[in-house]
Image (cartoon, rainbow, N blue to C red; front, side):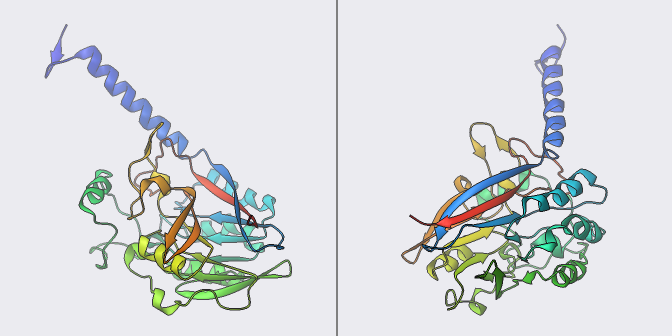
Length: 311
């Protein structure tokens, strides 16, 4: 039996074959779109249930026709309103395709925040970097300007398209949606991953008047979650994590790409701060950076949240 570096050739070939099969499956899974349905018992007593479609981390690249068809089809769910939690782009040329894919959903009331990939184009990065960041306690750009050579995405066109459709821009500001005779208060932050969040501009908790209020942010950094929760917001929506993107079956995510713990990398959980408790929903998103177009044990998704009165 021939061997190289002490590894039998048959074993080496088997490892290579298994690795290739894993990569092929991860590429397939990245196009296996799912709808996650979640019930959140968070509304005041007496309110009728509300259905929110949360769309996040589309990371659109030109030519992703299957993703575009799937996003257009979601209008058939007839949500009460739509929340877009950012990172729509992974291609500077992707704005028209994002607006086309979301066009049917923009017929419904909606609101949005942006993520770092809306502002800046993607670049190749070794996935091992995220593990190294986790071990070192560093996340995101830590307030530094993006590296020289990073492409600035034409996010203004995305903003203008959303605004023209009547969606609320929640960039470090407040807003309200009229939905079925009710008023929903929304407070949003720009992306904490690149230190664009300015909570001091919206601090103080939900304003008087709306029947229900919630917080919206792209990246679920603890400083943003702590501030929303301490101020009394009963629900916070976020994205950014991709659910871990490359997960270990029966174990889960290894990283979150922020300082949130991996137990809450996606789905519904709770967060405590300042003596208050909020529900937190983190979308695993429906895309991936164009340079790492794979997912494993973490299929792409959009979430349909049904808010109901609490117990």
